[in-house]
Length: 81
Image (cartoon, rainbow, N blue to C red; front, side, top):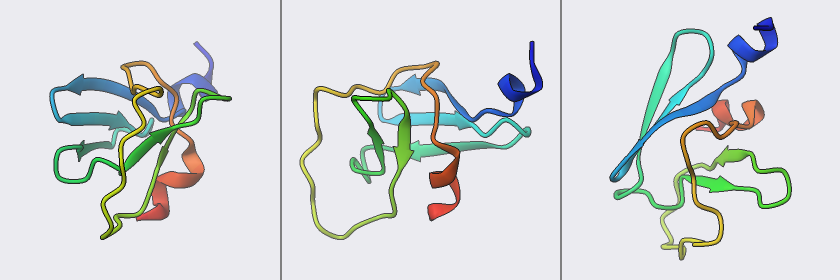
């Protein structure tokens, strides 16, 4: 296992309305997708998951890009909140 594989953020668990993200340094983040369905989005071209800032307007969820365990997380968007 390479160091870049250990420090790369990734989705570790998707259960119901919560998604758990392991940031690679021992910190985990849980996102409640029921309260904020547009918090996570998956880029169909690269397959990476991005985190968006909370928005007040309701956005429709894209059903083509389903978030699954093992998906890579874009590290640039982790500090976006």
